[in-house]
Image 1 (cartoon, rainbow, N blue to C red):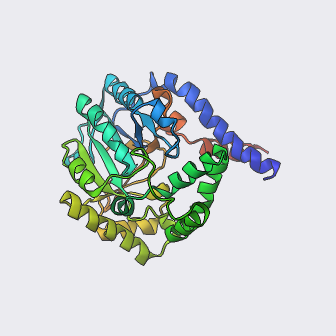
Image 2: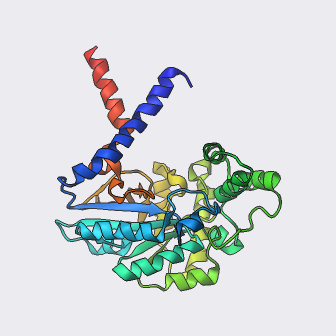
Image 3: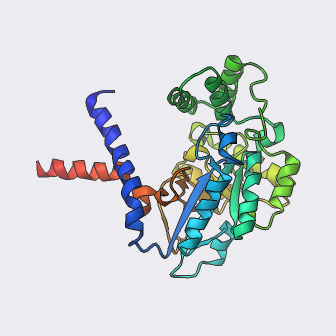
Length: 332
Protein backbone atom coordinates (compact mmCIF):
# COMPACT_ATOMS: atom_id res chain seq x y z
CA UNK A 1 0.00 0.00 0.00
CA UNK A 2 1.56 3.30 -1.10
CA UNK A 3 1.31 6.61 0.78
CA UNK A 4 -1.71 7.84 -1.20
CA UNK A 5 -3.58 4.60 -0.56
CA UNK A 6 -2.74 4.78 3.15
CA UNK A 7 -4.06 8.35 3.31
CA UNK A 8 -7.23 7.43 1.42
CA UNK A 9 -7.75 4.52 3.82
CA UNK A 10 -6.88 6.34 7.06
CA UNK A 11 -8.72 9.65 6.71
CA UNK A 12 -12.25 8.16 6.44
CA UNK A 13 -11.49 6.12 9.57
CA UNK A 14 -10.35 9.27 11.36
CA UNK A 15 -13.57 11.03 10.33
CA UNK A 16 -15.61 8.14 11.72
CA UNK A 17 -13.64 8.28 14.99
CA UNK A 18 -14.35 12.00 15.22
CA UNK A 19 -18.00 11.13 14.77
CA UNK A 20 -17.81 8.80 17.77
CA UNK A 21 -16.57 11.74 19.86
CA UNK A 22 -18.88 14.51 18.65
CA UNK A 23 -22.02 12.59 17.73
CA UNK A 24 -23.40 12.40 21.31
CA UNK A 25 -23.47 16.20 21.40
CA UNK A 26 -25.04 16.54 17.96
CA UNK A 27 -27.78 14.08 18.84
CA UNK A 28 -28.99 16.31 21.67
CA UNK A 29 -30.03 18.91 19.12
CA UNK A 30 -30.93 16.74 16.13
CA UNK A 31 -34.51 15.74 15.44
CA UNK A 32 -34.70 12.02 14.58
CA UNK A 33 -38.44 11.83 14.16
CA UNK A 34 -39.83 9.96 11.16
CA UNK A 35 -36.71 7.83 11.07
CA UNK A 36 -36.01 4.18 11.77
CA UNK A 37 -32.69 3.08 13.24
CA UNK A 38 -31.90 -0.63 12.90
CA UNK A 39 -28.98 -2.22 14.73
CA UNK A 40 -27.48 -5.67 14.33
CA UNK A 41 -25.82 -7.79 16.98
CA UNK A 42 -24.47 -11.33 16.85
CA UNK A 43 -23.95 -12.74 20.32
CA UNK A 44 -24.82 -11.99 23.93
CA UNK A 45 -22.54 -12.83 26.86
CA UNK A 46 -23.82 -13.45 30.36
CA UNK A 47 -20.82 -11.53 31.70
CA UNK A 48 -17.44 -10.03 30.80
CA UNK A 49 -15.83 -13.14 32.29
CA UNK A 50 -17.63 -15.26 29.70
CA UNK A 51 -16.46 -12.90 26.97
CA UNK A 52 -12.84 -13.40 28.07
CA UNK A 53 -13.08 -17.13 27.27
CA UNK A 54 -12.40 -16.18 23.61
CA UNK A 55 -14.82 -18.77 22.23
CA UNK A 56 -16.37 -16.45 19.63
CA UNK A 57 -14.97 -13.83 17.32
CA UNK A 58 -15.47 -10.52 19.19
CA UNK A 59 -17.61 -8.94 16.47
CA UNK A 60 -20.38 -6.78 17.95
CA UNK A 61 -20.95 -9.21 20.81
CA UNK A 62 -22.29 -7.56 23.96
CA UNK A 63 -22.98 -8.54 27.54
CA UNK A 64 -26.50 -8.71 28.93
CA UNK A 65 -25.78 -5.53 30.86
CA UNK A 66 -24.68 -3.69 27.70
CA UNK A 67 -27.77 -4.83 25.81
CA UNK A 68 -29.93 -3.64 28.68
CA UNK A 69 -28.20 -0.23 28.57
CA UNK A 70 -28.81 -0.11 24.82
CA UNK A 71 -32.55 -0.60 25.26
CA UNK A 72 -32.76 1.81 28.20
CA UNK A 73 -30.97 4.55 26.26
CA UNK A 74 -33.47 4.54 23.41
CA UNK A 75 -36.52 4.18 25.65
CA UNK A 76 -35.35 7.11 27.78
CA UNK A 77 -35.04 9.16 24.59
CA UNK A 78 -38.61 8.33 23.51
CA UNK A 79 -37.83 5.87 20.72
CA UNK A 80 -40.33 3.14 19.97
CA UNK A 81 -39.03 -0.41 19.41
CA UNK A 82 -40.68 -2.22 16.52
CA UNK A 83 -40.70 -5.58 14.73
CA UNK A 84 -40.75 -6.13 10.92
CA UNK A 85 -44.47 -6.86 11.14
CA UNK A 86 -45.05 -3.28 12.30
CA UNK A 87 -43.70 -1.99 8.99
CA UNK A 88 -46.55 -3.67 7.14
CA UNK A 89 -49.14 -2.19 9.46
CA UNK A 90 -47.68 1.28 9.03
CA UNK A 91 -45.91 3.52 11.53
CA UNK A 92 -47.34 6.62 13.15
CA UNK A 93 -45.86 9.93 12.02
CA UNK A 94 -43.63 12.14 14.18
CA UNK A 95 -42.12 9.28 16.16
CA UNK A 96 -38.59 7.88 16.34
CA UNK A 97 -38.23 4.12 15.85
CA UNK A 98 -35.62 1.46 16.61
CA UNK A 99 -35.34 -2.19 15.61
CA UNK A 100 -33.04 -4.77 17.20
CA UNK A 101 -31.71 -7.61 15.04
CA UNK A 102 -29.35 -10.53 15.68
CA UNK A 103 -27.55 -12.48 12.97
CA UNK A 104 -26.55 -16.17 12.72
CA UNK A 105 -28.55 -18.01 15.39
CA UNK A 106 -26.24 -18.42 18.37
CA UNK A 107 -27.60 -20.27 21.39
CA UNK A 108 -26.40 -17.34 23.49
CA UNK A 109 -29.18 -15.24 21.95
CA UNK A 110 -31.38 -16.81 24.64
CA UNK A 111 -29.65 -14.42 27.06
CA UNK A 112 -31.39 -11.54 25.30
CA UNK A 113 -34.89 -12.77 26.16
CA UNK A 114 -35.02 -11.58 29.80
CA UNK A 115 -34.11 -8.09 28.59
CA UNK A 116 -36.80 -8.10 25.91
CA UNK A 117 -39.29 -9.25 28.54
CA UNK A 118 -38.20 -6.68 31.12
CA UNK A 119 -38.67 -3.75 28.74
CA UNK A 120 -41.32 -5.36 26.51
CA UNK A 121 -39.42 -4.68 23.28
CA UNK A 122 -39.29 -7.00 20.23
CA UNK A 123 -36.22 -8.32 18.40
CA UNK A 124 -35.59 -10.13 15.12
CA UNK A 125 -33.21 -13.08 14.72
CA UNK A 126 -31.77 -14.15 11.36
CA UNK A 127 -30.83 -17.84 11.36
CA UNK A 128 -28.15 -19.69 9.39
CA UNK A 129 -29.76 -23.11 9.10
CA UNK A 130 -26.84 -25.41 8.24
CA UNK A 131 -25.11 -24.65 11.53
CA UNK A 132 -28.42 -25.23 13.26
CA UNK A 133 -29.03 -28.72 11.84
CA UNK A 134 -25.38 -29.84 12.06
CA UNK A 135 -24.63 -28.30 15.48
CA UNK A 136 -21.40 -26.87 14.09
CA UNK A 137 -19.49 -23.76 15.08
CA UNK A 138 -19.51 -20.84 12.66
CA UNK A 139 -16.39 -20.81 10.49
CA UNK A 140 -15.17 -17.36 11.62
CA UNK A 141 -15.31 -18.54 15.23
CA UNK A 142 -13.29 -21.64 14.37
CA UNK A 143 -10.51 -19.44 13.04
CA UNK A 144 -10.72 -17.08 16.00
CA UNK A 145 -10.69 -19.84 18.65
CA UNK A 146 -7.79 -21.82 17.23
CA UNK A 147 -5.64 -18.88 16.14
CA UNK A 148 -6.15 -17.12 19.48
CA UNK A 149 -5.10 -20.31 21.24
CA UNK A 150 -1.97 -20.29 19.06
CA UNK A 151 -1.20 -16.74 20.19
CA UNK A 152 -2.01 -15.04 16.88
CA UNK A 153 -2.99 -11.36 17.17
CA UNK A 154 -6.58 -10.25 16.63
CA UNK A 155 -5.50 -8.15 13.65
CA UNK A 156 -3.96 -11.19 11.92
CA UNK A 157 -7.02 -13.30 12.72
CA UNK A 158 -9.30 -10.70 11.17
CA UNK A 159 -7.12 -10.53 8.07
CA UNK A 160 -7.41 -14.31 7.67
CA UNK A 161 -11.18 -14.12 8.10
CA UNK A 162 -11.45 -11.40 5.45
CA UNK A 163 -9.24 -13.36 3.06
CA UNK A 164 -11.52 -16.41 3.27
CA UNK A 165 -14.63 -14.43 2.40
CA UNK A 166 -13.68 -14.54 -1.27
CA UNK A 167 -14.23 -18.33 -1.35
CA UNK A 168 -17.32 -20.54 -1.37
CA UNK A 169 -18.44 -22.15 1.87
CA UNK A 170 -17.21 -25.67 1.06
CA UNK A 171 -13.76 -24.28 0.20
CA UNK A 172 -13.67 -22.49 3.55
CA UNK A 173 -14.69 -25.72 5.29
CA UNK A 174 -11.88 -27.62 3.59
CA UNK A 175 -9.39 -24.93 4.59
CA UNK A 176 -10.43 -25.16 8.23
CA UNK A 177 -10.42 -28.96 8.31
CA UNK A 178 -6.94 -28.97 6.76
CA UNK A 179 -5.57 -26.42 9.22
CA UNK A 180 -7.33 -27.40 12.45
CA UNK A 181 -8.41 -31.03 12.09
CA UNK A 182 -11.62 -33.02 11.70
CA UNK A 183 -13.11 -31.90 15.02
CA UNK A 184 -12.59 -28.17 14.49
CA UNK A 185 -16.29 -27.46 13.93
CA UNK A 186 -17.30 -28.93 17.28
CA UNK A 187 -18.49 -26.12 19.60
CA UNK A 188 -16.43 -25.48 22.72
CA UNK A 189 -19.27 -24.26 24.92
CA UNK A 190 -22.75 -22.74 24.97
CA UNK A 191 -21.13 -19.45 23.97
CA UNK A 192 -20.04 -20.46 20.48
CA UNK A 193 -22.63 -23.08 19.55
CA UNK A 194 -25.75 -22.48 17.46
CA UNK A 195 -29.22 -23.18 18.74
CA UNK A 196 -30.50 -26.69 18.25
CA UNK A 197 -33.63 -27.40 16.23
CA UNK A 198 -35.70 -27.89 19.39
CA UNK A 199 -34.26 -24.76 20.99
CA UNK A 200 -35.12 -22.64 17.96
CA UNK A 201 -38.64 -24.02 18.01
CA UNK A 202 -39.06 -22.89 21.63
CA UNK A 203 -37.30 -19.59 20.96
CA UNK A 204 -39.52 -18.73 17.98
CA UNK A 205 -42.68 -19.22 20.04
CA UNK A 206 -41.82 -16.19 22.16
CA UNK A 207 -44.19 -13.28 21.53
CA UNK A 208 -41.34 -10.76 21.21
CA UNK A 209 -39.31 -12.82 18.72
CA UNK A 210 -39.38 -12.74 14.91
CA UNK A 211 -37.33 -15.22 12.87
CA UNK A 212 -35.71 -14.40 9.53
CA UNK A 213 -33.60 -16.06 6.84
CA UNK A 214 -29.78 -15.74 6.85
CA UNK A 215 -29.19 -18.35 4.09
CA UNK A 216 -28.42 -22.02 4.65
CA UNK A 217 -24.62 -21.85 4.68
CA UNK A 218 -23.99 -18.19 5.57
CA UNK A 219 -22.63 -17.68 2.08
CA UNK A 220 -21.18 -14.48 0.64
CA UNK A 221 -23.92 -14.28 -1.96
CA UNK A 222 -21.96 -12.24 -4.48
CA UNK A 223 -19.63 -15.27 -4.91
CA UNK A 224 -22.46 -17.49 -6.21
CA UNK A 225 -24.55 -18.10 -9.31
CA UNK A 226 -28.24 -17.18 -9.43
CA UNK A 227 -29.26 -20.82 -9.18
CA UNK A 228 -27.02 -21.36 -6.14
CA UNK A 229 -28.38 -18.23 -4.46
CA UNK A 230 -32.00 -19.28 -4.92
CA UNK A 231 -31.14 -22.70 -3.51
CA UNK A 232 -29.57 -21.03 -0.44
CA UNK A 233 -32.70 -18.96 0.14
CA UNK A 234 -35.14 -21.82 -0.42
CA UNK A 235 -33.23 -24.44 1.55
CA UNK A 236 -33.06 -22.18 4.57
CA UNK A 237 -36.73 -21.24 4.35
CA UNK A 238 -37.78 -24.89 4.02
CA UNK A 239 -35.94 -25.81 7.21
CA UNK A 240 -37.15 -22.75 9.11
CA UNK A 241 -40.76 -23.27 8.03
CA UNK A 242 -40.69 -26.85 9.29
CA UNK A 243 -39.27 -25.77 12.65
CA UNK A 244 -41.12 -22.54 13.44
CA UNK A 245 -44.37 -23.15 11.56
CA UNK A 246 -44.29 -20.19 9.19
CA UNK A 247 -42.29 -19.13 6.14
CA UNK A 248 -39.99 -16.16 6.84
CA UNK A 249 -40.45 -13.22 4.48
CA UNK A 250 -37.43 -11.28 5.73
CA UNK A 251 -33.78 -11.84 4.82
CA UNK A 252 -30.45 -10.50 6.10
CA UNK A 253 -27.55 -10.68 3.66
CA UNK A 254 -24.58 -12.54 5.22
CA UNK A 255 -21.65 -10.15 5.61
CA UNK A 256 -23.86 -7.48 4.05
CA UNK A 257 -22.82 -8.37 0.48
CA UNK A 258 -25.54 -7.81 -2.12
CA UNK A 259 -26.26 -6.49 -5.62
CA UNK A 260 -29.31 -5.35 -7.61
CA UNK A 261 -29.67 -8.85 -9.07
CA UNK A 262 -29.76 -10.29 -5.54
CA UNK A 263 -32.67 -8.01 -4.71
CA UNK A 264 -34.53 -9.41 -7.73
CA UNK A 265 -33.80 -12.98 -6.63
CA UNK A 266 -35.00 -12.19 -3.11
CA UNK A 267 -38.25 -10.93 -4.61
CA UNK A 268 -38.55 -14.09 -6.70
CA UNK A 269 -38.29 -16.27 -3.60
CA UNK A 270 -40.89 -14.19 -1.77
CA UNK A 271 -38.98 -11.94 0.62
CA UNK A 272 -40.63 -8.60 1.37
CA UNK A 273 -37.84 -6.99 3.39
CA UNK A 274 -34.08 -7.43 3.03
CA UNK A 275 -31.62 -6.17 5.64
CA UNK A 276 -28.19 -4.82 4.71
CA UNK A 277 -25.20 -3.68 6.77
CA UNK A 278 -25.23 -0.20 5.22
CA UNK A 279 -24.74 2.27 8.07
CA UNK A 280 -27.56 4.67 7.29
CA UNK A 281 -30.81 5.76 8.84
CA UNK A 282 -34.07 4.61 7.25
CA UNK A 283 -36.23 7.62 6.48
CA UNK A 284 -39.97 7.25 6.91
CA UNK A 285 -42.25 6.57 5.21
CA UNK A 286 -40.28 3.81 3.48
CA UNK A 287 -40.25 3.83 -0.30
CA UNK A 288 -42.75 1.48 -1.91
CA UNK A 289 -41.16 -1.50 -3.70
CA UNK A 290 -41.62 -5.23 -4.23
CA UNK A 291 -38.68 -5.76 -1.89
CA UNK A 292 -37.85 -3.04 0.63
CA UNK A 293 -34.19 -2.64 1.60
CA UNK A 294 -33.42 -1.68 5.19
CA UNK A 295 -30.13 -0.26 6.45
CA UNK A 296 -28.53 -1.42 9.69
CA UNK A 297 -25.83 -0.11 11.99
CA UNK A 298 -23.32 -2.44 13.60
CA UNK A 299 -23.94 -2.35 17.34
CA UNK A 300 -20.77 -1.76 19.35
CA UNK A 301 -19.93 -2.84 22.88
CA UNK A 302 -19.01 0.74 23.78
CA UNK A 303 -20.71 3.89 25.02
CA UNK A 304 -24.30 3.66 23.86
CA UNK A 305 -24.36 7.32 22.78
CA UNK A 306 -21.87 6.51 20.01
CA UNK A 307 -24.22 4.26 18.06
CA UNK A 308 -24.26 5.33 14.44
CA UNK A 309 -21.50 7.95 14.69
CA UNK A 310 -21.58 10.51 11.84
CA UNK A 311 -23.53 8.08 9.66
CA UNK A 312 -26.45 8.40 12.07
CA UNK A 313 -26.54 12.06 11.03
CA UNK A 314 -26.75 10.97 7.41
CA UNK A 315 -23.02 11.08 6.60
CA UNK A 316 -20.36 8.48 5.81
CA UNK A 317 -16.66 9.03 6.50
CA UNK A 318 -15.54 7.81 3.08
CA UNK A 319 -18.16 9.93 1.27
CA UNK A 320 -17.26 13.04 3.24
CA UNK A 321 -13.61 12.58 2.31
CA UNK A 322 -14.45 11.83 -1.33
CA UNK A 323 -16.57 14.98 -1.61
CA UNK A 324 -13.86 17.05 0.06
CA UNK A 325 -11.23 15.81 -2.43
CA UNK A 326 -13.59 16.52 -5.31
CA UNK A 327 -14.13 20.13 -4.19
CA UNK A 328 -10.40 20.72 -3.76
CA UNK A 329 -9.74 19.30 -7.21
CA UNK A 330 -12.35 21.63 -8.74
CA UNK A 331 -10.77 24.64 -7.04
CA UNK A 332 -7.38 23.73 -8.45
